Image (cartoon, rainbow, N blue to C red; front, side, top):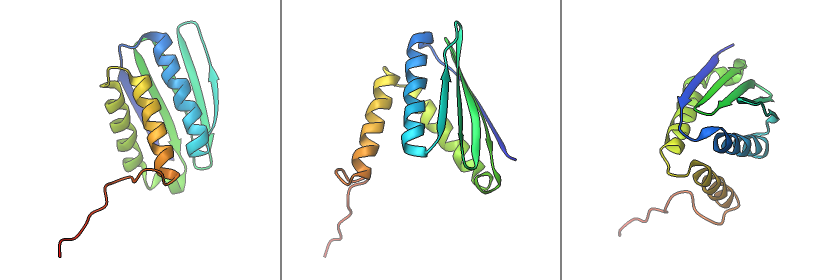
Length: 128
């Protein structure tokens, strides 16, 4: 089975990193159909996640996020795309002044698009 391993350093400290990871776990459950468990520790937290075709863990420390995921056969065909998307989203998020707020805004925008309230992309019009 294909594996994904992503590590990113951050400067959030454990309380803010914990908050971001917990919000990610909530979004993963509601948007991706994952079952997540969150274990808080003294120096690190562990988010375990699973769904049909994928499972893994996200370890959260005061200065690092470390994701390990194992993809099943069907999802494994999309490993490169999945890994690239996770890396891009995490890197974009960690560049923000307030990653927790940026994540919340992103989730809200996604929900609005899904509900049909906001177009995902501006409609193109043709000139006659």
